[in-house]
Amino acid sequence: MVAGKKRPGMVISLIVAMASNRVIGNRGEIPWKIPSELRLFRSITMGHTVVMGRKTYESIGYALPNRTNIVLTSNERYRAPGCILARDLPSAIEVCPEVENELFVCGGEQLYKEALLIADRIYLSVIHREIAGDVFFPEVPLTEFQRIRSEYHEDILPYTLSIYERIS
Figure 1: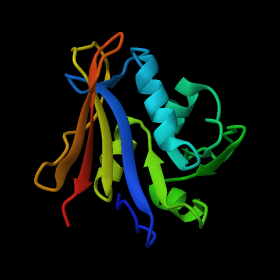
Figure 2: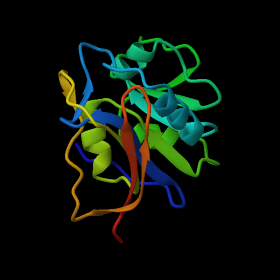
Figure 3: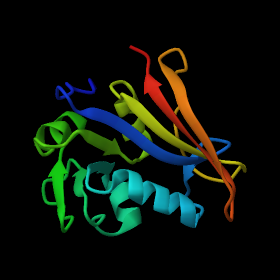
Figure 4: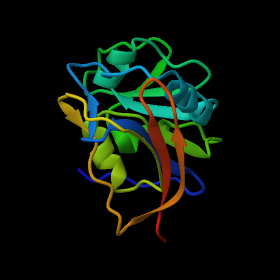
């Protein structure tokens, strides 16, 4: 599947927390709860549009407040209160509000793989521990992205947030 056309002036960002072994989920759940990482996610995405797959939406259980939520599903009868439904990533970009300047892709695995092809930026929190799981974040192609910032955070599980930008 082709990832789709980007809207001029809109940055497409991936935002993700993963364990050091690339795990992002286990049995439909995020296998950790790190308060400062959740606050970081909220502060970065607040006021913007977030795009997620149906399973990611169901693991959260509700529309994220103060954000435009777009849920991807091929089921036309699916209901996600407070969310816009789209069939795929190109459709999500199309229905994204015109005023949006940064769209955030926030899971799951298949959507990250597709969005990585057109992403401009990646907010990647790496938890400094291997954790068991069945859903993984793809490798960041370092020939296409460069790390522009990195900051270590001490919490229940320490992690490092790195921000990558696509090399022009």
